Length: 96
Image 1 (cartoon, rainbow, N blue to C red):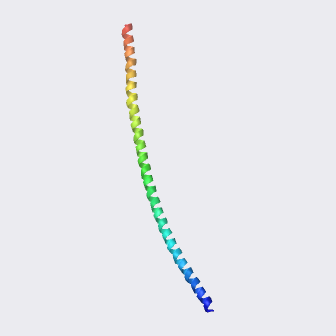
Image 2 (image 1 turned 180 degrees about the vertical axis):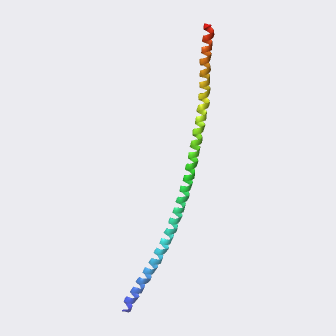
Image 3 (image 1 turned 90 degrees about the horizontal axis):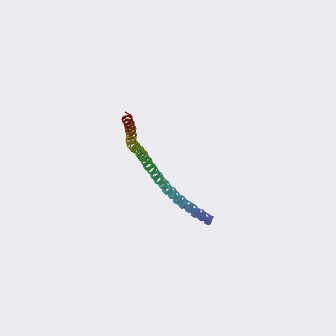
């Protein structure tokens, strides 16, 4: 009987040690999980800020392209109109 009690006592002690080890492992895993979630949130925040900056720069680029196109198109339109008028004036002068 005493030998059985000793065996059960050893078993209980081993189980308690295993339980403490598992609880410590669980606590470490929970800490790692919290750290990973925090890092994920920080990365998402950085990604959001980067996307907002990208959108702002894309809009700015679009405005610059529009201005550049207008700066190129407008003089061409004016030059074309001047050439038309010059041609008309030249034609009018030549027929007069």
